[in-house]
Image (tube, rainbow, N blue to C red):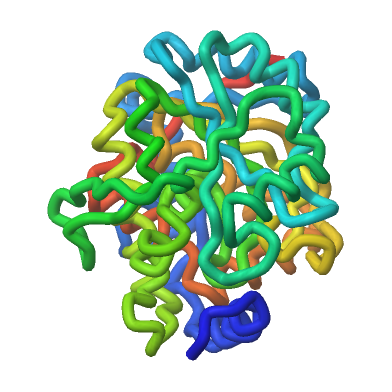
Length: 333
């Protein structure tokens, strides 16, 4: 099957046929990485990851929460975020990101081309989208502009290496700034999705992570989550302690920003910003906040997560030793 944007959206619907996951975040689950929050609360603080939280979604609080986790961020810094399809209604605002980037010395936004065709499939067209969406205040490095570099995957579920944009090796540290939302194939798009798919090269790596080496079969459900965990592990292993994660729980459509102007309008209200040095903890904290929300406005997002077996992202990261599913939530407000 030809990998086009239309087929990407069409096949995303197929993912809805995947069976529901066996448990909910914050509820008992046999898979590692989705332990009961109440049990986590009883653990000694030293056994938990620290996840910082603010209800305030503005540049001032973004900077403040980053300063809680940035002690190992040195040298040349890549800020990985999803800059969006043309006129996407839910992307993080450039006005929100601009002052944040300005206070990180020697930093640049990094992105990679996409695999599904459309306006961001080539570097030249991608740069036009960047300008149209307002990403003009700093350098934006399209990391696969000059090809690929292979990162090894230690003890991967399915992959032994993943093709990343070659420029990724030019950076000493990585700040993963994520618009947390639903995702048509992954169930949710958090920090793992942002690096696992977002840093993979458009021509090779993204096909590997989607299980599309031969274009013959679209991978959905548990296998896709494991492929994302393999790719994410390769990046986490490469940067070691010099990588941090921020999830912005704002305009949480059930659709990824890759859908662009056709993304479903958010139903869930904005919740705030989460930050951690632990990728598993920060993604699980975001999922837990959705599941623990107090009314039915959470239902669309939960249905999207479960219908794609999205919680397997969390258990796969735990099995890879990528972080701690038990966390302490620390408000900075």
